[in-house]
Length: 268
Image 1: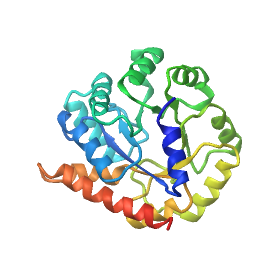
Image 2 (image 1 turned 90 degrees about the vertical axis):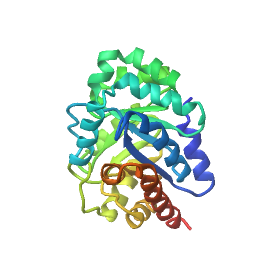
Image 3 (image 1 turned 45 degrees about the vertical axis):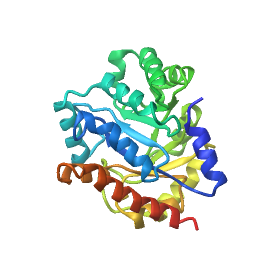
């Protein structure tokens, strides 16, 4: 069993919502990822989404694309990412970690080999953006057999029939993309998000996390009122990109503490 289900259950019992940050492994440097992961936990996150660098991150906007480019320039690949999770697990065996990436690196390793290696490293779930639910049944089964939760994206344009299809194969939580477009998009409509989340819940008992367009405590709080988890990526990666050398960890920690306050204030 992964750590994701028990984490969401514990939060629900406390009437709290999850805060899920995204960072790209290997950005800004190979040796920075594990310290950043620990800093995120210290700042109050509940689950970490760790990006696997990829040369063609088609679902990502320019901020996260540049993070992937920096990580690839630092020679960080899938095996390095798994080693980073294993290092993180030496002192943190509680915080769930989800790998977010694309099918190519996983396929090259082999789905079964990846699932076994990821589970051994301490990974709890995998979100492979370009494996649609129609083609995921065998992959999801392999992941589940190894103790990994297969996590899927839903978007504002996902038909209700497809939501029901995803519900049959998903594990851990559902990731609802609140906006059309790539990561880093703006103009979050929380009313529309609330309607879509309610529809998703009609088909699936898993928690629903919402990401894209969340930039500060106010937008994090607005999403926390209607979802089970708030996912923040581009804003954090932008902080990593722009922070002066030597200040990255502190700047990220300060930002995430503010996001945590926003999420918690929404449920008081």
